[in-house]
Image 1: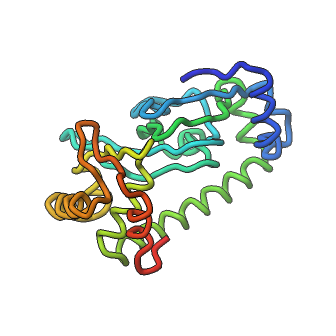
Image 2: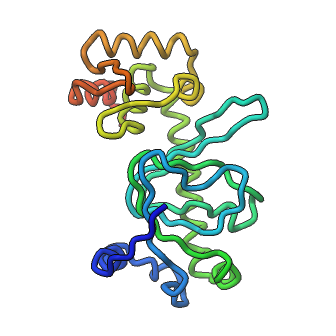
Length: 224
């Protein structure tokens, strides 16, 4: 995590993404702007977050580790959204793991310094309720999409969503579980994408060699 200290850049973020609209009190003294690089950990699994983050640019993924060592990919987080809100509310004592997919820019609100003021702010709590409601609706829609389209469409969307600099590097076991298919079926469709020239297998992962064709596959049958 790197703190953004350049005044001009910080002022640009504050002007374009006014966090003050969410609160009845002046939140600025408790806020800093931070940057996470691709694959950097935003929340460490099993810890109590020191900050409530508001993602203003970038994409991250949420995962859960099991006692048997298996890791499950749970969801994707896209700007703008809160990170760590469930821990702030006490809905869970420790956080799930959250890792940046792309470079992520966040507001970091110090929980230690203003937790009581935040949780007593009706304006903020109303906004948070709306955010959580929209999040639940989005999760339901994504689940429905996963059940309604063939794997080619869902995998193409998944690759586009998780790739960075046109490289796809997700673990096959996690991708297969997230998409609700067998490991073997996933590998079969990936191999077909390579055969058709949509992807190229490299030592660094799968390179998207034909982006328009992959986007077309992702929108087959009207998928979004």
